[in-house]
Image (cartoon, rainbow, N blue to C red; front, side, top):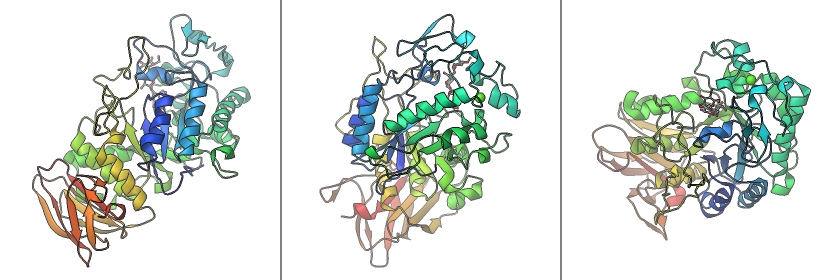
Length: 474
Ligand code: LM2
Ligand code: CA
């Protein structure tokens, strides 16, 4: 269950955080497929508690398995999956197998009209009763396996996945989504569930739906959210045989490097030598919806220049199963997604350059990012070669004879004639521009018969990265 089931040569997933199903369907057709995105991680699909002010995190508190949320209902979900698969874009669902909602004063009303009494662990719309949960306790020692896996994560009622009844419910939810055509799952809070229980659940899910273009006997892709900074009692290694695992150390280290707190020259050994998981087991990202709110060394859209450089490195270096974050703007952690006076999520709107307005950030529509998604597709299957650095924060490398990328994170210009490994010709730098009708709207680089090209990235340039590849040759 490590195969992401991508279509063609595509290989990047985008997390369309809090988007509505109808908007995602349209985005698959209008933008994601034409720009070579492989898949979308969608926000949780199960009916959730309605929380005051509608913070984004209310969706991490399910009260039933009806597919009704502020993103849309089951019909809309099914139609989205169909339309995205029709254009070769896969859907991965963020699934909550660890818990239901947290405490709530009195009767909770959900986004699908169901009611629950979370305080007494009564969720009649599933149905679950107190017997289906672990006895309540608090996690105060994160190195105590029992607490991490059987107590309540931030007070969320903790399901007992060793019970046959609970397992059956969870498998049913996953099977239902597979029948609707999804390609796999992001498993929320995986570390808070015993790997053996997850193994049982994942092994008993059905195969992917062949009516949606998946081959016979294809297994759902699994990527498990396990936060492991290196010395946890419950380690990421317990989960790697079941599927891919989120590599949070990738996010921390890439942030640190492009913030200028670790010289870029060290990135030459990027990957397992840094203590990261093997490439095919690592789900990698510059930021995700949690750590983009947490501060620290991570980078997010609020530091656009460094963020774009980190993302370009993420997509240029041959390591990991890449995921790109697509955010809504926020000033405080709990802020709701863009919504109207009736608390309905607002659809994104686009300006003349295709960028999002009205509260959505849409990093995935930034030229510097979507063109690197195309770069990653163009260089698929090649190795890294011809690493160059200036001993500090200027680096460059080739991907076979398909692509070349250079970065300047020093306060002085990068001006060098470098081996690009590319066939002779004129190439469009896909960071500063697009190739449109055979012409480049940004800078171009001439590659001579020996593969050399003059590379210039000024310290004051708008972006600190330059990228060339064979699909953007004039
Ligand atoms: C995750 N992965 O393991 C998600 O990526 C993360 O976003 C979720 O937390 C978490 N696990 C549970 O699914 C978010 C958010 C929390 C929020 C929970 C539940 O980061 O702040 O907790 O969702 O909605 C909120 C309150 C918290 C309260 C809890 C229960 O912030 O103070 O705890 O609800 O009422 C008493
Ligand atoms: Ca648990």
